[in-house]
Length: 345
Image (tube, rainbow, N blue to C red; front, top):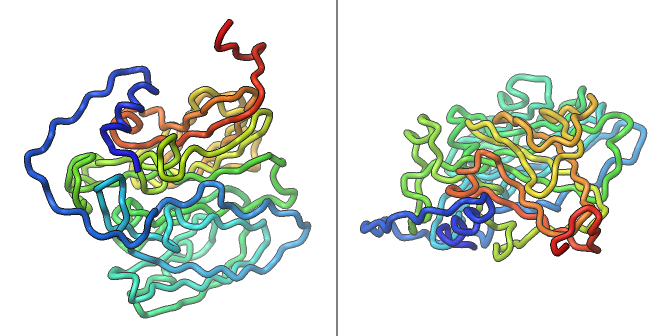
């Protein structure tokens, strides 16, 4: 992973400003805990294929919760809460009219807290949360629901301390495609933005615990994609996301919050089409530089890629990029088109 101060310097250059190094803390703090996983960050290219059928189907969906210690960045650990051991939780893909049979479990060897799951795509008490709330070892439990309306929708844990569970990773997206499906694109990406509130400073080595007062004040230590600083950047653990010139890339940008509005912006590009609030039935707005994405929603944006080079995905509340760790990069490879952009005229 990228060290925070190194990342801050790089992000400062991206944003066109000079980064300010943080003062060294004389208190070494707590030691980092041994991690349970090498990486908590879900692969942003790991999505189910688009739906190609004309009739509703029945789905068997199994999700379990896992509380895991992982690194936010080198030498900085936190105990995350997750669906299926990743942040964000699995991308669930279905069609209007489909029926989903959910088996939900909170294994007692992987969890210490009560959990549940609330789907914003579901009619029913708490989006299913009322009937999936279980303590470790009490499950599994089962519910079934029919998907009545299309869109890209958020899901999350909602057991009472919603902000704590969401901040530490318990969220994801369920896409309900319309009957006619979505327009074809070349690639799809899935990213989860979330705020992490800890009781230590950005980059301070050691084990960071959750800070409930900071959460109440809506003052995050980190703002992250998929639970890690800079993992989808050059030099990051997973590296830049690959794409090619003349492709169309669709991005599902899940703003988990739990509190802050996001301003999704692709540096070096625009959203050729942006579907506000995950509304895939209405006509998208076109060629917009950024959007306003409230906490608890998934936005859908499409980029055209006529020229090579990195496209940097940021929240244009840029202190979150420069100071708090939120950055993903798409490396576009292919032939130059100097009529569009000429780096050496």
